[in-house]
Image 1: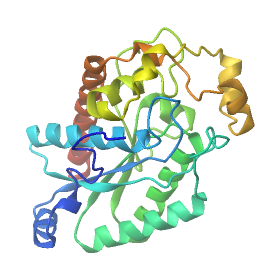
Image 2 (image 1 turned 180 degrees about the vertical axis):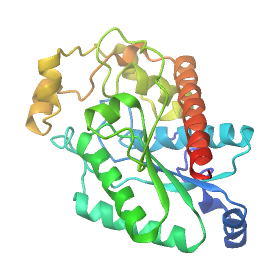
Image 3 (image 1 turned 180 degrees about the horizontal axis):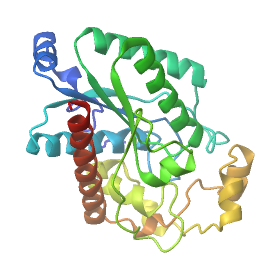
Length: 276
């Protein structure tokens, strides 16, 4: 499928810089933003890289808002071999062992610390609970081994679901988001993700999304769906939870901007506390 230009996931990251430019940014106190996604099914209409594309777009907007706040930032190339439980019963929904992921994170933290970077903010583009607990675990290892101020940045509902302690220095909790537009659970490849993909990567959204029926799950069904594997495949055979047909590019762009603005202010506040 020809998706057009601008779909490089390294776009806007430090992979586009030379080593002297990266070294200068470290000397000047730039913070690092790092997205953690996964390759995973996203219904019949979104690409399997959705959880990599969307946080990458998010971090580009976060960096722009941080610049407005006087905080220089670089984006680390996204991590995408994550942990996948819920969609594990679908093709192209791959997973690595949590121990492998945390050790890879630790090795990268070692390099970042040795280059002189002090602060690394880790963002997740994937809702799987074990994936996010693993990101947090990797952050703890990086802090303990290398003394780097790494932190897991997350929405308050995710922090509560995992659960994590909001007072944990390895966690940065975002300000609460506005109420969701969907009237029922929009958990995966539904209205929100379809809207954001239409805003940032429209050439990768299959045109058939407008004809997909909504998938509405009650609390008990959501709990079974989150068990993953055959449970999720049976409950959502097409792979989505929510209403993809309601996806709207303008809504997606606004949601990304709101999340980026809230994240930038949370990062700036965290830096102020760290420098006291």
